Image: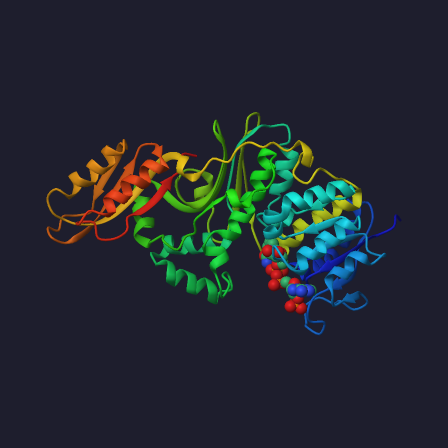
Length: 430
Ligand SMILES: NC(=O)c1ccc[n+]([C@@H]2O[C@H](COP(=O)([O-])OP(=O)(O)OC[C@H]3O[C@@H](n4cnc5c(N)ncnc54)[C@H](OP(=O)(O)O)[C@@H]3O)[C@@H](O)[C@H]2O)c1
């Protein structure tokens, strides 16, 4: 039997413990596919005494995860600590510098420091693998980097945060508001006590930055991603969207346009018939569009011990086999430098919901503001008539530029009869 691949696992939380369990439970399958056994020999976490639901007896223990990088009996390091800075990041750098391949689930680290780390890994000729960092168990990285490698990709988009998708699904199915859906998700363990990273779109934007780098062969650029979360979505907008034939999803979209690359994370209205509209609950999905392949849709579990360990172990099998590809699909010096397209240049249709006092002339004022900014109406819907009362008015537009829409909204918001900040949701033609 060929020498086993000796693995160090740093971080023994949901992900790290899941990796130990999967390597143990599926040892025979993994050995066959890797051509040799893959064995964890060293681990690191903060609390040595904590019960992790999986035995760590007989494994070398390190209080300092960075020390794993210098253990001569470790062939490959799995980083499952997390964070764009701190011990997880220090370990990844130290391991790569020591010439050890790294497998990580850390999207924050890759989104923020991915360009530097890729250059380091390539200079050392070792793998930096991160299938688990995007959409958990969905093999989106492999699909984009290898399966679709011959295509020019025009767009990649996805539902990249299960917490947000769960909340939006609950809001739609039960007609509840965001605050209630969030608090229930927290009780069920689907949302963190501090939900900001998820509901404000940051976690998903990290993943989008990674997908965009891969899809378009350019240095990962988290700062270029326009990020909005789902806090402003109301049950009313979800209901009105349904009436118009749309579902509201938090989508990450990276798109090639004549002006460069758009990368944006925000709630979208998507046609009910599109496969992504049907991806509900904690599930994730990634859609890629290539010039020869057409559209592909991948759906699955985006988080949790099993799916994430599945992705990490697939990367370990590649390392065991000696299969490597450049971190971003093309070698760092060959990455393209296509410009970023700012959000103000996004062209598309818009949904606008206003709460207005029902009195003569209001609709004329709203349509005049749109007309003056060269925005043409696709539809307008007023729910019931209640003279003197506040009623919702919904406008959908034909394609226009985001900057035009923003200017029109500023004018509409200033109208005396418009009582709340207008709700604006972008309609995506998919
Ligand atoms: N959870 C998921 O479903 C999922 C999915 C995809 C990607 N990820 C990514 O995977 C990574 C880990 O996530 P997780 O959910 O497994 O987190 P977690 O459950 O909070 O586990 C983190 C682990 O890191 C250890 N740790 C923290 N600081 C450390 C330090 N300074 N030195 C040594 N160990 C340290 C903790 O030790 P103690 O246990 O002793 O406290 C814990 O075992 C993150 O990058 C996350 O974004 C997670």
